[in-house]
Length: 349
Image (tube, rainbow, N blue to C red; front, side):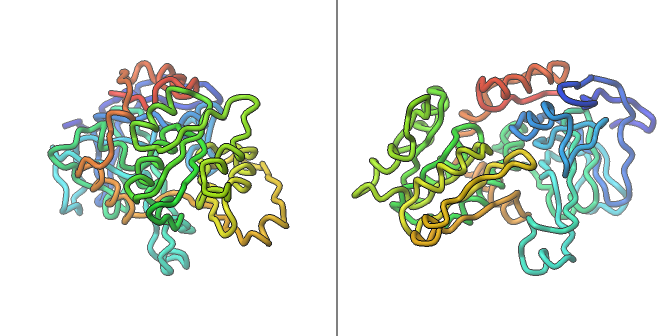
């Protein structure tokens, strides 16, 4: 158990592609907080964007420790904490809603006006604030490893995305992008009894999608009309019942709008860069009665559902965690995801 005034290793983000491994003070904790000894922290597309851009408007203002998909052991608890004790294996989601604002009161916790975010997984220890401890800190089941448990946060976001997509058994669901998030969509859409179509430019990603249950693969390389390819798969060429974007690329958002059938739903899940815009064909939107949805983040309920899916073995976690590296190689780990090598790397402090 760490003593007061002890130091820890941490990856500090200073600016675009400027991460430095430093020794800093182990965080102090308050009465309702938990100090977590990090056992595994995963790389994520959001972390890669944070690394490339040097911050995040909602979550990270440098200099700061970052990394938000992590799990570990409880090292110390505040005097008001009752449900956790040192040595417990736990996983924390990266946020917690306030429970008091308008959106929390109407059950839209992902839109909470006062959503509290935590980062700091790329370090030996991280402080779990009282609000997260109370709502989104969960004990890891015996049959789940630390690295598997760290998948809970991104999986919870996708559980939310699938639940908002009105997917019915037998539906054709076009999933644009077969990175970590797109692959989670493939797996969950298959669990719904629907027919996932994986679309990507990288053959190795498409093959992982096949292993997770994709019924069709579309290589979106140069010169390929992915909209037509999707329509060719469907009866009478009407288009997918649901189209999902998991790329965060405005051009792909626009394609997703064109690949659904009349009355279809488009889930624009991937976050685009701030300030970007898309064009929408108003006639297509109006006369085809399309539903366009943005879906963001997760809620405490979805976090628990995600851990349950991992505990029950319904997600092939081995297809998602493709490498392990020590904390000292955090930059290398981030560049792997930037260069589309593997899926996620488990960073081990």
